[in-house]
Image (cartoon, rainbow, N blue to C red; front, side, top):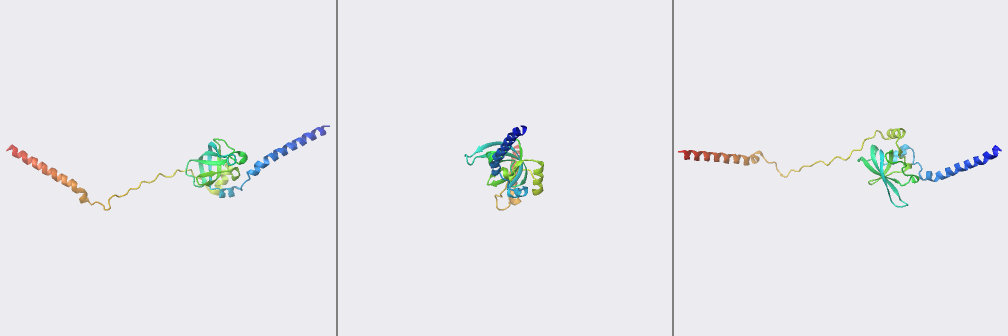
Length: 196
């Protein structure tokens, strides 16, 4: 009797498990792993850690994207110079998008197309863990912090073609001193004459 009751319950549980597995299959198939950490690091143009910030949706139904503002923490590979970058990902986690929320720390394996950084879950991008950071450091070495480009250096241009020699530079001053002394001598001479 108990066996008869347990058999349909067990069959229902197996069927439910099969449905769950079948339901997860297509999503997992859309986000296949693109290789191990070594292959992912070689394929990525930029590898860095950062904190997810605000995000916005962009595009239509077929090409909908989520643009995340990311505060860059450490850079392992690539040409990021700013402390904050925009990272584009598919709009939903079902389509391999980022599953995090603002404030989460992520390790990014990004592809650069011009100024655009793009990630998907299958490329290794995911929450920061001591294990995945250690693997990246083993492959790519120690990270560095983002540094904004240095301000442009001022350049000075010499207006005169030839350097001015000391005599030409001092001549106007000497002439003024001579005129001043002559004026003083003339004033002194007139003062003596008036006194006589």
